[in-house]
Length: 127
Image 1 (cartoon, one colour):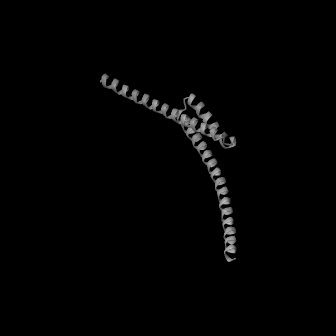
Image 2 (cartoon, rainbow, N blue to C red):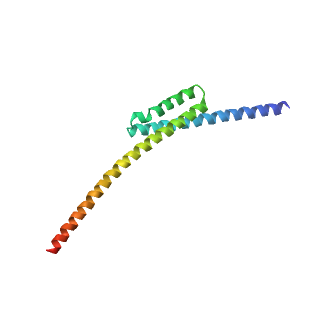
Image 3 (tube, rainbow, N blue to C red):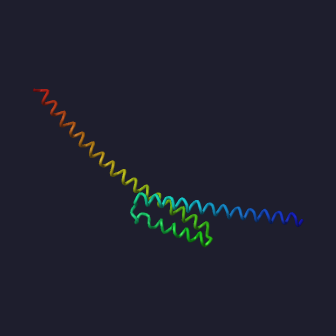
């Protein structure tokens, strides 16, 4: 009976330790991904107003991890990363809109030149 109790307690302890290590690796992964995304934000030189809130959440997530509040820290780290990814996506979208506008203007100018050249060609061919 004592052997069964000892085996059961050992199994529960092992499960608890495994659960904790899984949580630790999860929070470490979430924080690592958020830090990597933060590096992308810095590389893209995004406006600080777009990412200051998400950076604050990342700092808070690290503090929560140190306090042992793993689940809250992981949730905050993941939210921080998502907000930074959203800021990057919005920035890329704005850049694409600007490029699209430039290309539309160039196309419009090309079409106007085409009409001009066609009218010149028609005048010259009538002579």
